[in-house]
Length: 573
Image 1 (cartoon, rainbow, N blue to C red):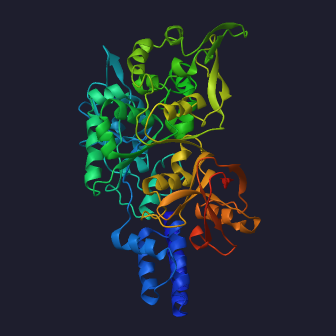
Image 2: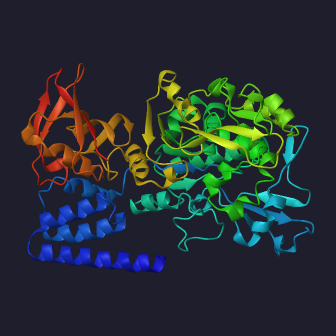
Image 3: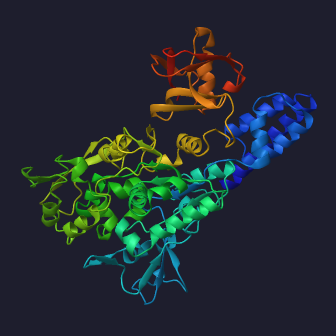
């Protein structure tokens, strides 16, 4: 599969090169340069390929095309942008194990050192032995004689593909692919693995308290961010966190580092589908023999069948139990007799009784221990872009037949991203009024795990990390959308003479302006919808495009209009 992809890409580049050669030969250097820029912005060619083709163009023609300055800077000085550090979520880091004693399953053993366990298809039958934890007196440990470790700290290969050791064998759209597409996108944009795009894997079986006390994770994360800052010309870091990684990174920002440190080292914080206040799916997995959590995240029945008996031993599961501060008295579990009579209901205020009634040893003690972490969901006071999915059927309530405890519960669905409930995903919204640093939230058309594989999310992260599309100083005509409920909905803004301004199209004769802007943002729609509203405290920039422009760079800038004119709120998808 990859081989065919490589051949196809090679043919694509050959065809592009032929087109460029013909254009240059015909003394159409300006058109050639526009092809280069357009191909790079639309991610059809990589940063390296862009600069190679650009060099051929500029030798033949000193184009007047206004974007020439930007690409010249890009290829001469390299991209100027914030480096990225990724904090993965549940199941998102490799786990390796070393055995100092014989185990019952001989095929679990490896000859020496640490061998892959999560995820290793060779040792899939070892998961229940190696990944199970034992709780005693406030501490969690693996089975005696088994030692585990998290490999490749700082390296993106730790989070690209979950199958430890598999780099790329046609599994890019399967359950084993995780941050692979995101990393590849940024590498094609000129980022370098393990230099300005890095990863901080952790043992996702544990809660923040455990990885802080026993694994020294947060000190390693702090050092990684500092090293990344120092090795990238003192550029502050964009911290991207997914799922459980959101809660882990929030704990880090609020409890481990100072405000002065954050002001220096953090450019922006981008949580993706973070389970801030837990999720109902963990309740089903821990006590009700109902495993939508495993099915939605892992998407492999063969693998999940080896985890169902051990998930209740992980403190991270209890950390992800729905919290009363957010879920309140909503019923999450109904217990009923076999004849349908109601026995009792349980809300997030009733977990002590729930653990007792459903025979979860130490459940209440563990829950109290881990729920003290991130208890108030305090705003981190860094620039936040909180992205999450919504509109997907997400398990919310379980109806359990207590006369048949081994059978799965009936599931009642609510809103969310398919794994995390909307109540938990939107905890971050309260930060807007709680911190002085900028805050933005966006609903994304992507479910829980697919959000890290979604092109519009990559575009958004890039816009945050670089401000302008190619990572060089902004020039007139660069565009972005702010203040909407989705990535491609909101107030259209453009860069003009050193500042961002809202866009207003003053005439129906300029109907192509919005289409050009949406195309420039990577949207597929050729007919964006627009609403106009009256601005009260800002000026807007009038821009008029015809049907021939590729970007707003080539359109006519009519100047700034006075306060109170009509602004454009657009929907381009």
